[in-house]
Length: 476
Image (tube, rainbow, N blue to C red):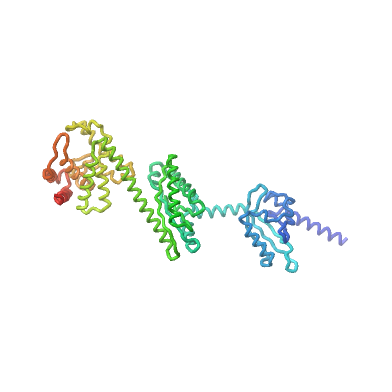
């Protein structure tokens, strides 16, 4: 009876442990010294999709993701060599459907006289937790719009690679999206975002796995390129330019200004290299902007010459004289450049004035004069809506204002009129007076200067007239 009682108690406990093993929310398993599974609990079907019989006797390493295998094998060898007694690892396990799922295993090595007999442990499903962790890590290291790395991660990698002698030479290039602000302002941020995503696709396609691509500003990307010298980087940039041309043919205008720098020795400061690449990018952007603006000015002057009979020679004379007057008045280089562009583009509004008015050989009648006066406002609107000329829009609007307030279109007076417009008014009047017209002969220089002096303080700014006369007299 006592034996029966013991057996019954054992049977109850066995049943209890079987229920526990079969219903606990983790896999319980055993494997031998050859890594072959000798037992695996039924919960494996809920977690990995297999029936227990399917896995019986297989090498458990076959279920581990290829990228995780080396680590797990190293851990197994350590346990076999008595270096560790407990196993605790995270890895990706192959499911029956062919996907991989993150699991966490915890086990104990069982020995007999220091000989590895088996390992017994539990395997937990931690996939959702891992996915959440990966998502949080991704958000903390990546740009949410483009999916490339963010500035913080880029600087962290910059520091890490800088310490690796084997990574030299290290090159950096900074790419800035040209015209992104204008796209955002005129077409909306959604279109601007599309442009940014297009830029990332181009850079990623060209760089591939050879570098670390990051968005480090609103319209700026940085690429860290270990083991790449200047020649390698220039090749990549040429490929990027080609990809941009392909997009242009598809109707997507993507233009990037790119600056590069390379660190060859450990003595060089990596942050100096970063700053140098940024500086070169800004210089390139300035040059490309000036080049594009020059091209645009040349194209518009051709149109003006054909439509308004305003000769390029006249505009170039205005630009040259205005520059000298501006220097005489101690204007800075930025304002001198602005005045030069104004001199070339001030009459852009005339392209919308009827040709019969522009080509009329004699004086205009009242109706024609009203039409002609509209060219300043038309020019203002054209310039305001053209990013390359928006900074001279107010000056174009004001170039027919008078010092005494009797000009048009706003009736501005004195210093209410932009200085660049006041300078242009004097120079334009002088050039007009000293040039032949269909209806009159040109004045002499002395006659034209007398006319300016007589109208200083009424039509013209007297200080500008004084500076202009000084410039002309130095030429005589």
